[in-house]
Image (spheres, rainbow, N blue to C red):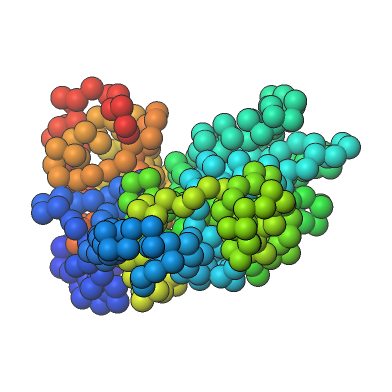
Length: 427
């Protein structure tokens, strides 16, 4: 396949024929005639996730309360079992990962545990491009300690509005910083940060560092344990395809085992002692200690099926295809949408790119509406970003080709002009 043929449908079909993950697409429910490019917001339902949810419902029907300890997947150990399945995706030991809470709850849990302001080391470091919930949680944690977010929360600024320069993050790691919380992938632009480097630089300065991996889990492999990351957290409804509101996850480096969680709850107890009902809290000697309340079993169940596929596919192969898909998408945009006002915000270098591509356009909201009416499901982020996520497990190269072809037609015919340039209630 020569570079000259990249704009042909035949080129896309040839790529699909050599796709080592092509078989997984049949596992997902993909609406006929729809090109789904929003897996970075909500992954699609798979037949396996549906089956394991029904299996757990069956356990409830059959065993009642006995489901906590009976059946193939006793609920009492489900969060830890799923942690074992997720651990290879983030490069951690099984005991360092547990599936629990939500992204925001886990931020509060881990920051309340690891943020220990002392003397002149009192500030928290983030970026101005973080997802809002991270900033809201950090502001809340500061206020709970009687501190002023405007003074004690340092947000590294972007030089050009879409990405963060890691040199600026490192320069902001001063002697006043007690804790750093960074995204692995910036949610708007898809920029992948160098987690290993930032962790090393933070530790050389005596700073605890954690990461929000919501936009990388399931699309980008990590090595949190080897890199010495102190803690991390993520959601499970994007690339992990766990379903809307799926239970989230967290990682805590084994070096911190034995530390009391900032927000203690009975499901963080040592499992052998939990039902002793003592008022002296004995935390689990694992990431399980950072659970708070009773797990949401029915929101964990779909992950059992979804994560089976990641085990079979392997996160390295997922990443390899993801990079090829996003590279192909960028190449098609460069070739077929030149002169139409689009700008690719996502870094082009493989080591700097996550699992989605962000396009900037002044008519972004209108264009998204036109895409939806043409059978494409995109994602809009104010004020002018279109995010497109070709997901390795269920997006083909032909899907990407057809999506760009539709987008080019929308632009050539100015179909977007009939829509208002504003977002919906849910973008």
